[in-house]
Amino acid sequence: MKTKTIRLKNRPVGVPKPGDFELVTQELPGLSQGEILLEASYISVDPYLRGKMSGTKEPRFELGQPITSKLIARVVESRNPHFRSGDYVSDYLLWQEFQIAGGSGLTKIDPHQAPLPAYLGVLGITGLSAYLPLLDYGQPKPGETLVVSGAAGAVGSIAGQIGKILGCRVVGIVGSEEKAELVKEKFGFDQAVNYRGSNDLNAAIASACPHGVDLYFDNVGGPISEAVIANINPYGRIIVCGAISNYNETTPALSPSLLPLVVYKFLRIQGFLIADFSSRFPQALNQLHEWLQQGKITYSETIVQGFENLPNAFIGLFEGLNQGKMIVEI
Image (cartoon, rainbow, N blue to C red; front, side):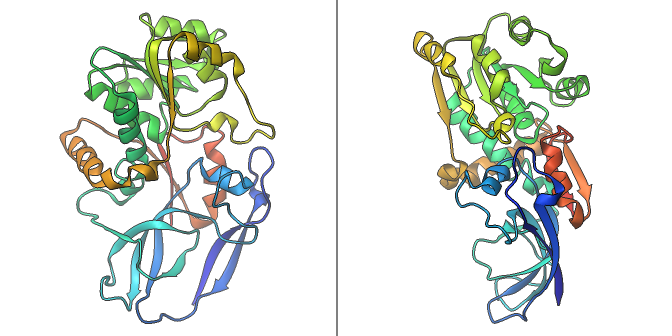
């Protein structure tokens, strides 16, 4: 049978362009014993993929090869005793409509427990990236002020809600008034700052955080993070989840001016690799699912229709077109 696939054609320079990708059709071989045929249902597009396209993150994507990300697929045909036709599975797989897998690494998911896209978001790596680093490295305490950048995004919106559950006052940094209302009304943030609507971001953050910032969950980096850190309290904690503002830069962005603050304010800055927490994924996912069922957390999704629109959905991440998780439905 034939399948469509999306490959990396060029290494992007600056913001990715549609021409950096190519859509091709290829022939799939027949199934061998132990293999299964998968049909993609939902594909996750995430900012971290940008680094793998330019080669700054390993393993990098090779030119002329399909892109890989987390996706949900339906088993169409199985010659593997552990899977049957109609099962839904999730794993890091190719940007292809159909593909053959051996079964290793695939996780079965139950569409009756939660909507399928949720397993790419709040009940997947997105939720884990908010929950585990925030609790382990941030150690939020009741009454503290937590600031989240990229607060209307997939990880940021969940991190802020977890902060509220744990008793923090939560302030979100967003890029529009619409997103400011979203994080307050839907996600329960106490305050939101629209960085695009402020002439003095330092002052705007100071106004939103009259007692300073105790904990910062950073999804964007750049000038936004500099403004937040300028308002951080002594012994503040900074969790660096991402730096989407820098992903398309052609030269490294350094902030040596912040180093004295780290010394004088006794700050702790922590990056992380979510795979390092893998032994605790089941416990964390159980907690997230419980909070979801209890209505203590909710989520937003931006779902784009059509396999061919995968590149445009990915590019849209860097144009701020998503609210919550960006997912392509096939």
